Image (cartoon, rainbow, N blue to C red; front, side):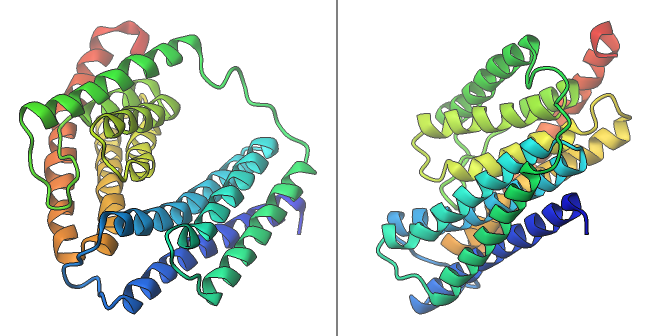
Length: 302
């Protein structure tokens, strides 16, 4: 087994393990508290933050390890190592989360996280020993930096205005809005990096302003919502439509997955339907035609 393959295998095993064991720990603690996800769950605000944080750190580690595998395939082994090390940090933060909120860690959780950290750390160390292909050009061009700043601000403003002027109630206490068309717009016009950053930065800024306590979930939800459509930059209308639908689905599914553990399955389903068919659906219907108009009108995007 060559080093690159070994690094990818270790990343994959570590990433899947940390995500799985975190979910098992959430199930275990909820069960000990007398709750089941198939009924409405009533938790205090600190408990909601605890469960959502534990899920977030586990899933975020998994995503970082998937990114590590991607960069390793591209030959960017230094970036792959950094991504794996970040996955280790996220896993360790998840490990200390129960004690921070006064919950006892199960032995299964402790052992599982320890093993996953060993796998991810080993992957990072192996990646550092493999010659790396340098990334072409700067991480972000000056134009991309300006676009991220401008459209992140626009995205955040649209979320805040929607919520303050014409709020649409969500059963989970979240924010139902129609500003996601901005994420789809910039992702399809400028690609993965810009789409992902606008989705993350704009959503998190709005969450901070509106004091939404589970803002960190937006990093995964709206990051994926921007990255997936960004993969189809300058592609056909059909491919872009499919990518937007997948991105919107992953956004709604991320919130749904967290909500089932802090609100229960019945409430989470209602929220999922709103997020997918109203928030994402309306945003796609509004944003995709604008993309095609811009592509036909401005030569720079052809």
